[in-house]
Length: 121
Image 1: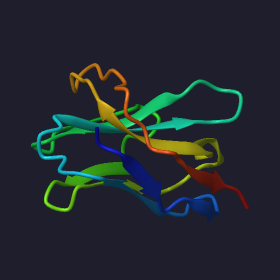
Image 2: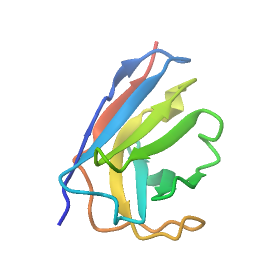
Image 3: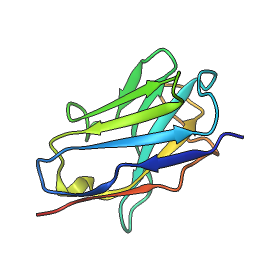
């Protein structure tokens, strides 16, 4: 079973940017859909973005136009570029092997340990 390790979180001011990375322990070429989710304190885990092997994407409305998900199948990596960050983006961000479909993502059983993103002045 693939293992996932997230990195790149940190403290950033509102309006700032961060790039999260998710490293997989084996090839992700055969994994149809990979996703990013987040969980803020006291809230349920929610979808951020998902991406197919071919690069098609789907985003939560709250991050459209600000976040970009990408994947590098050759390097077994998934990324989340986050721009124009807001305090409400503060959460632990998790990488997920998603069950899809892209239009209606369903979480899969494989998660990373998460990386904390804090947006505050």
